[in-house]
Length: 487
Ligand SMILES: C[S@@+](CC[C@H](N)C(=O)[O-])C[C@H]1O[C@@H](n2cnc3c(N)ncnc32)[C@H](O)[C@@H]1O
Image (cartoon, rainbow, N blue to C red; front, side, top):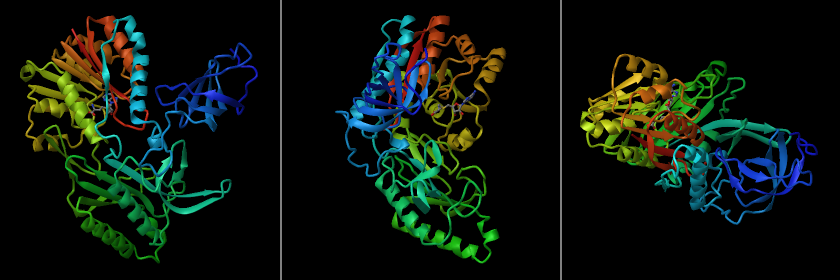
């Protein structure tokens, strides 16, 4: 129905934000004298906190809803807090930081229940367990990548020629200097500050990614939680000196190297430092890697397993949460006969869930993953942990299942952890053909989870044994859900 009387850029006054919906947008209802418009759904992007009364600008007018953005807060929400350690303001990386953690959990739990509501038509009284909190709420990221950038804006009178921070989401050309970040600990923030202060003194320009020229590009900091080891990686454009021949490349690089090594003397947790000679046009920090200090990898320990992490390794960014998730998946599994069972870990990503099962004495664990680089180091890590009951298949799950079933091969337990967007429609019917006693489904998207659970319940005699939401990334809208399906 056409929303007469409301145009793009109009301001809607005194709107109460009722709740947050999956994806993190605020949800409100319009009160309007025109009965066609009255009660129309309003979505609110950016920093919406339930209970806030705000003036909203209309960004998009759709048939059944309005997309808006907050322009002023008329009344703060009663639940809004100032986060005690966040000195840096709001950012996309920690959008929910001013919502108390207990409230964040309630919101996430509610979102999963709402998304799965439809599945109740197939199985009444779904067995929801209370949401599982993240073991660490602040400073939980074990990896962060800062970018060097300049930011000039005639409109906002901003002329910053040198900065290190995060790209502003939705406005890539801007960098936000956060003076650090509340999702990493104080030592990581201190290293960020010291490196930024030092690099400013060198008289070299930050890289311009529109023109692919100039020098400073990225600083990556990785700090493992359980083993407590840190890796630094500094990325720069090596071609800068080709056109600026008056500068002594070796001398400049030597100054940076000396600074970083002194940093490692000061903070002994630093075990590995790399230069990344990075001429890539894409905004990635990995180029030609040169180890300039000590170990090529750092260690992390999860669930009685050790992992060596290189600069290019994929690894869950919240180690405490990863350990919890993997132990929960293992606990969910009916393991009476695991030592005689073949476990298929579909959408395996890096080398974790499947190694946890291999370590728990499954007869055989096969992980299937599309991206080769994601599981690049699996053999080394398997060796490190003396695991010889695993294998990795680099393939699309949908193709793999087809072939595996045609070869009459069997599996006894399925673990499915698809990417946010979707699972290929060919995969689900094949998953059901295994007829395993149990399927454990880990999902980062309750909406696609609802669709897949509906399909499974509609086309088989599986029942949902338990469902549990988990908070993986506090202060963000991300939610993880684990579901056990049994025959
Ligand atoms: C949510 S992650 C899996 C996380 C992992 N199970 C863990 O232990 O943390 C989803 C993975 O699915 C992979 N993927 C996406 N589409 C795929 C496909 N069609 N076949 C196989 N893997 C796929 C992605 O590359 C990604 O690594």
